Length: 166
Image (cartoon, rainbow, N blue to C red; front, side, top):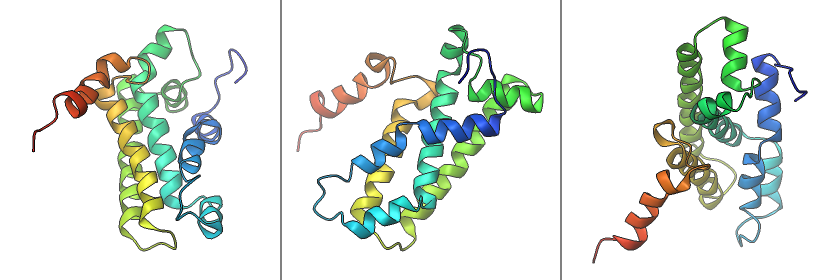
């Protein structure tokens, strides 16, 4: 974005989705998979609803969790700020709208997992797993990406150190 320019929320989200690394994370996770083939990559290139929903989910959850930190750094072109300006609403209302967008995206991801598709369950599971890790990373509007020691470390300890004996 151009410094000082605050785009309309639709432009912000469009650009944020197109330039986020979430598409890259999702598609590169297929590299090296024995089951991934040309048809799978062609399916992904068509930007199926589950992939779009996954990227949207990741983007809006990130925006909700990092809003206060970004605001504190003087960043004005955040999704929340753009929405507030465009619709003349409070921070709380903008957060509610972004949460609603996240819930809709989760429904679309779940629908994409449950409905038959031309790709394998292994590929769909990669998409679902990215949504899951984003959900854990930004749970309770905490920024686990910036502060993994606070958010992610307890999960890692619970999984690897305090695991259940069989």
